[in-house]
Amino acid sequence: MKIFNSMHNKIEVFQPIQDGHVSIYVCGPTVYNYPHIGNVRPIIVFDTLRRTFEAIGYQVKMVSNYTDVDDKIIKAAKEMGVSEQEVSEKFIQAYNQDRCALHAKMPDAAPRVTQTMDAIIDFIKLLVEKGYAYEKDGDVYFRVNEVDEYGHLSNQQVQDLMVGARIDENSKKENALDFTLWKKTEEGIKWESPWSVGRPGWHTECVVMIQQEFGEGRIDIHGGGMDLKFPHHENEIAQSRAVHHHPIANYWMHNGMVNIEGEKMSKSLGNVIWAKDMIEKISGNVLRWVMLGTHYRSPLNINEETIEMAKTELEKLKNSMKQAYVKIALANTSIEEAYDEELYRPFIEAMEDDLNTPNAFAALFDTVKSLNTTLRQREVDITRVKEIVKTLEMILCVLGIKIDRIVLEEEDKQLYMKWQEAKKEKDFETADKLRNTLMERGLL
Image 1 (cartoon, rainbow, N blue to C red):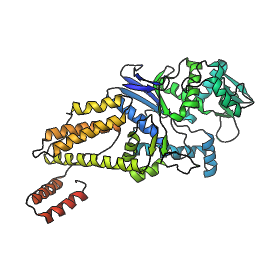
Image 2: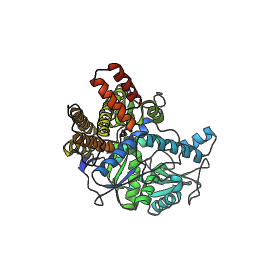
Image 3: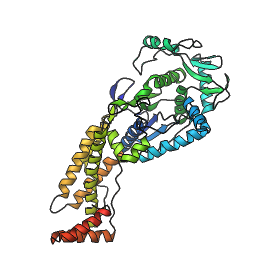
Image 4: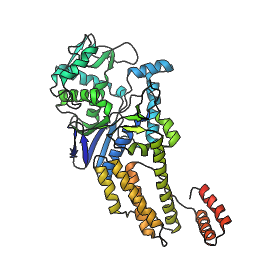
């Protein structure tokens, strides 16, 4: 398995910390609104990464958090006239509904900030004790200058960052780049701490949750959207170096951003599309297909053309598999474990190459072509059909595309046989009626 490591800005051969096991942490959502389609790209990308690892024999532990403490949540709670907890709960459920609709597996653990507060406060206390953080008027800040390799992940120099930071300089900070670990506040949800009544800054929660879920050692992979590389992931790494003397993960993976008709999504442009609306309109299968059609590190442009192309490709695949399932059922046999290694290997090799989904789709299309060729033979080799269908099912499992098997009842089989007989006898009127019935039942 090869992975593009953002930390070193190159593709590297994956070496797990523990043989046969992979530990993955993906930054989850701030739950103050419905997920938009940009929010669900990491869901699909890292679910596909997990499925790929599992397909090649690894045991995966994946963790993804919920940020349920944030100014945006407090604002939403005021506007909705409910508690912050009710806001968070509503949109956590909405996020998971979208996750399921996109056929993504649930993470093995999904910690929340509100349930991790004691550990977060203890971690900040440790940073203060070690001299990496300081308190000022009830707020606590992290000393960026104390970490030598700050800026390495995002490939930025501290001196260059300082130029931009001075524009928004906070007089309480020792250094304009220092970031907030604890915020004193009387507004919204808050906790008692050694420094003040308040709540934590954003950048500490993931470090602590990773520590709680995986221990203090490194994990294999930390992932998220490209927009999190700086400052969020950079600040996570800084805190981990200060306390644990390592950069959290051996591999950092970032997916590209999503554009709509060539433009970045933004409220000001009015082009924000909720994932639930897109799923309802085109289905989870089609949206996932669109998302995987572009390499995960590249920007993804969603427009009518890409959607229609995905619909067409998926429909061709479904029709071929439907025909195969019917042939298998009529032969009174079932799909077994045997598959075609020569067809499967190019697909899995593409996925092992830093999730090269465009090449993986090419291998998928070659497999569909082989199935169609087999189905068109005068004497159909059912054993061969079963092998190719099993191969396609294995491929689709890795991609997270769900196509249900067709099981024929005895009545369906009789209808199908009568349709074939009517065609053979050129009784086109009867054949058309039977064909319409079969189509209504989803068998053609």
